[in-house]
Image (tube, rainbow, N blue to C red; front, side, top):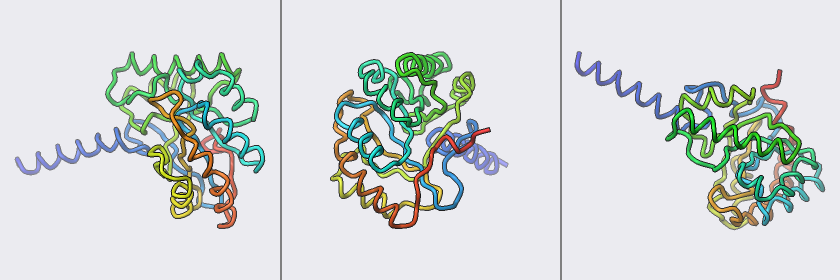
Length: 232
């Protein structure tokens, strides 16, 4: 009996841990981690806006006529409002990525509500666009996140393919990682900013983006709006 109890406790703990660190885990509420398994791909960028990369990424998206969603950090929206407005003016999707890019799994309900609400207000006030989506920093969540995001009717997103461009590898390495891992319906996680440094260097991601788009198109994929997923 003791062994069975320990096994059950261990299994429950494993479920909770998966809910905390699994970006697509549904333990703590609905989350969208990929699209239909057809030829669509969904580009997303986290941690901006950023003075070194966001505008360059927008230029590529405009030239290539590719949609993308930017999950923005509220304090950076306040610091670089012109860049946040440029994202909105380009017609890109805008999501909430908290106010300070803190790990939500370690926080209680009041602080989580503040992180979500303050970022929502900054984005809506400074861009004129109400964010429709939420992604937790690092994908980490706990039971209190669901209540905080429900207030704004957010769709919560994880991702299918992360390429660790936040480690600042060479642009060709980032491109190769996407080419190797892209698959039908994937939500691609890239970064136009640094969650912990307002002007952190993400130029490698901007440099990699044209090649990423070319490679994915050559493989037969097309890029689609993330807001198509989970709508209605």
